[in-house]
Amino acid sequence: MKVLVVLAVLLLAAVLVDGRVFERCQWARTMKNYGMDGYWGISLANWMCLTYSESSYNTTAVNHNRDKSTDYGIFQINSRWWCNDTRIRTANGCHIMCEQLLSDDVGVAISCAKRVVRDPQGIAAWVGWRTHCKNQDVSKYLDGCGLDSSFL
Ligand SMILES: *[C@@H]1O[C@H](CO)[C@@H](O)[C@H](O)[C@H]1NC(C)=O
Ligand SMILES: *[C@@H]1O[C@H](CO)[C@@H](O)[C@H](O)[C@H]1NC(C)=O
Image (cartoon, rainbow, N blue to C red; front, side, top):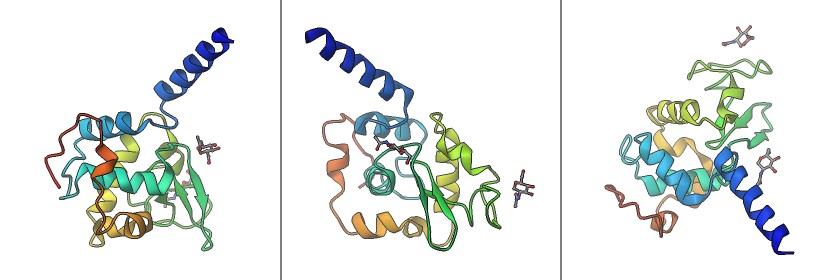
């Protein structure tokens, strides 16, 4: 029994290191390292709330929309405007294949999210942010992470 528990914990650790679904504070640290705290005036806690509401920090999340477009990855980036999945016509603003947004290596996804937020709509482009984070106290997303956000 104890051996099974140890194995289960090791397996879970392997999945977390693999980065398919990030543990909350690990994802917060990762975004901070990529310069997301305060990027375009958006606090790290808001980026955390946004990605939690969009994907629960799941890098492989894929959701199909009624308009035939698809949202990809931890930021749920849309295939009509930002990436190319060859299924529909796209503006491909991030100049990438949508599949790249599902990688464990989140560099491409973060660069593309930075591009999205620089558009006039800003962070309001994300429905998940408008619905669950806007005008909310989002500080809980950094609780216990030992990260002092420079921005509120
Ligand atoms: C992450 O997303 C993928 C694709 O939608 C799904 O198959 C997987 O179960 C999700 N993982 C978790 C832990 O929810
Ligand atoms: C999307 O990718 C396909 C396949 O590589 C390519 O033929 C097409 O031109 C691309 N479209 C855009 C808008 O990048």
